[in-house]
Image 1 (cartoon, rainbow, N blue to C red):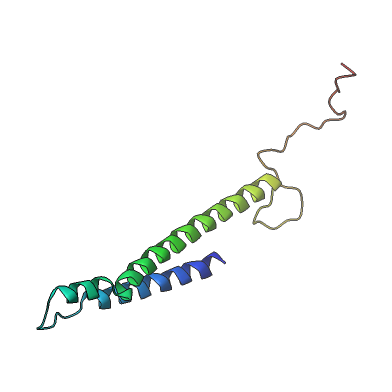
Image 2 (cartoon, helix red, strand yellow; image 1 turned 90 degrees about the horizontal axis):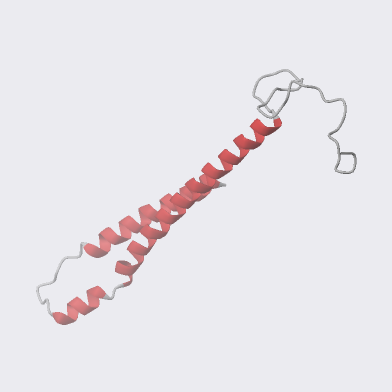
Length: 112
């Protein structure tokens, strides 16, 4: 899921770069005046291009962070439950397992 979001974000970034490149490299006509400045300044591609770039960067960065957090969470779960990549079907030692066998449960407050 995160890979798909990163690909979509990259598509937004590429399309934003193309739209921005086209919008900001227009050739000035020979009859240049103040009205042309207002017309060019209010064009949709000049607003859409940077918006697509920023939105694409947010998607890529957010997806990368979410994928990293998911990977960290899965690694913590696997180390906590003793799941390892090696074969063998027996119980695995983890940092939470103990070597001491407890015959009796701990005393409750009433028994103390």
